[in-house]
Amino acid sequence: MCEKYCIEKGLRFFLDEGRVFLQRADSGDLAEVRRAFTRSRSALEPWIYRPEDFDAWLSDEARMLVRLKENGQLAGQFNLSGIIRYSLQQAFLGYNAFEPHMRKGCMKEAMPLMLWLAFEKLRLHRIEANIQPANTPSLAFISNFGFRNEGYSLRYLNIGGQWRDHVRMALTSEDCGELLRKIKNKVRIENGG
Image (tube, rainbow, N blue to C red; front, side, top):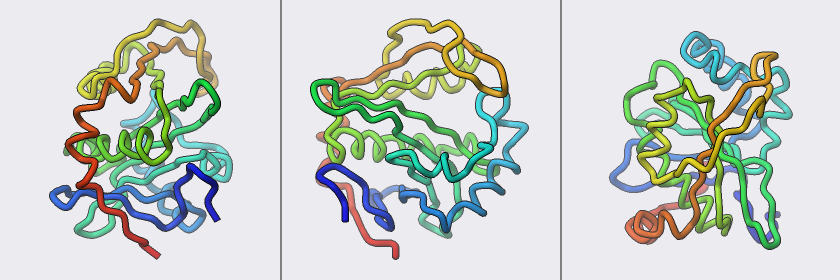
């Protein structure tokens, strides 16, 4: 049973006019996710590496898979981790696409659903994405959704065995109010089994 603000396993979130849906990852997805990380390795590194511990990877509070409606293929993933409640109501956002669906707009279509989940379903106030400064495609992607640069963190995250600098990008629920109003009554939820 879910607590007050959570995403139940098996639920799918989608818009009628979209090509993708979000589904919470569970242990039954791990073999497919491992293959997707392996297949996408050359495109993802040095920004993100295949997780060493997939059970830990799966334990993030809101690990969402991006799947194509047409055939259920895995196109990418989002996660909201480190959720802090009380007076902050914040989480950290991570994301990546998987080959062969990179640069085909799947993540762009899925991001409004992820923002709806963060701000409407989970009732967060702020989400932060930390991105390596040389990862200009990711910085451009996140900026398209209104995330603002809030600073630079030296040696912030250990990625691939090295402490790497990151640009802190953040968005609050007020910042994306117009987008949320546009899709609020269009988000569909179904039990995917």
